[in-house]
Length: 191
Image (tube, rainbow, N blue to C red; front, side, top):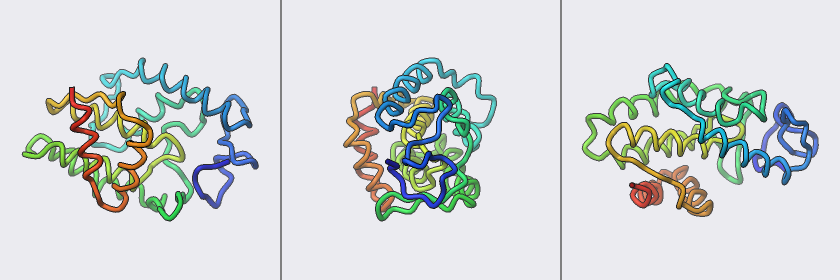
């Protein structure tokens, strides 16, 4: 069953499982295989091969493509449907690029001069979460992106000790403009 409410079957089989290159129709089996692929592809991710400014949405898309290329034809491509989860409605798909350019890109470009980098990283995380550029994989890509941004600004981060519940709670709160849990996670993850 789909974890998002959508009005399109562009990304899903009739039973709600994401359409995938392996033609898996069982949600649990797909989740298990996806998890394995993401672990392998995260280890082989080389940020230096992405020849784009880190503030550009296509840099973010490149990370997504690398993580999910084995499973989804739409890996690295912005979603083309409206999605919501519970009472949370994510950015209208036709405004994903504009939202990124207006919200995320300026903050990424201001990180170098920021006196409170952790606050700004939390804002970037919250903005990306609200935009939700992809049909699936937003959180995983966002954490890799935030860790890379932080590292480039002298704040190495390792999110591996953060629980799924902590990530979910922080993301849910960030949609409401409350960044305290994201700030806590970033501080907890500093190496």
